[in-house]
Length: 367
Image (cartoon, rainbow, N blue to C red):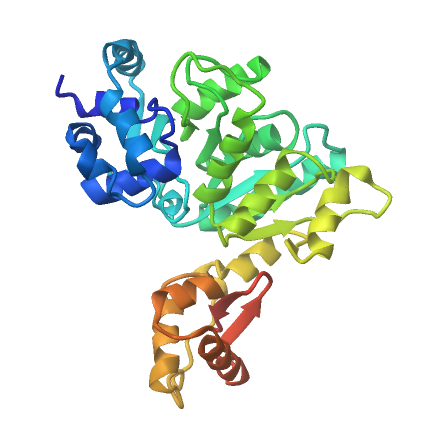
């Protein structure tokens, strides 16, 4: 057997090898085939693997059982995206636990430079519907990828509105592509596949929607996007989990506020109160905070932008100019500066009106 895809599928089936360990293995050895061909002594020396996990890899023999999965992929023309593939969603690679292998059916561009997760309660109010549709209408000029989970309520409203406006939209599923859950959304799922959208899952065929699959699905929604927007949510539920995951990935989180007596907005209000989400009232706020204003609304750069920039400030400037916003931890990672030096430099650049501080310790350049 020399089919690389079979080795990739096999890597997702090895006991004790989760997405974190798979990423370490791929970074070290390059391909799934090389992982299975490596000696136990080589595998166990890789950070995070050790003797027990190395033995699980070497002992894996169930390759023949995976032939059915390969037949399913070929029959339904499903695209597989492995960690090392060029088409793999690059934003997910920035996360500590990216899915080892993704199954994708559709035409939407997963590496869109702008991606927005729009999520919320399954039992939305009429106001929630209006806010969702108005938000997507306002985002259309910048052509973002709209991501959600195909669930009842806010999710399906977002998908339908995006399709109506001929915007790319992807549903991340908590099950294999052999089925659609909920079944009532099968028609819209088909429309997404053939009308500029897509269905994405880390689960192979035959894997049904189980309760414990949904948090895994939610991490993909959060990691795939630059910003996660919660329209309506109680204090418990999948949307709050996704918001927490997005915060953990240093991604922007935004929420629409609601009345203090409205249970459907209690989660949104709590996120805003705890400064884990930026309060927004519409698309204009999101575009502003993300620095995604359309060209017509972007003022021309000032000719004296570099005046009085120290060499260290120039380092931060050159990093920030490549991204809408960046978390302070990412700035530390990309430089050799200490936390105290980063803080001092950012403060000085704020005083010079060169940098703007955003919620959640994010920073962006002022244009």
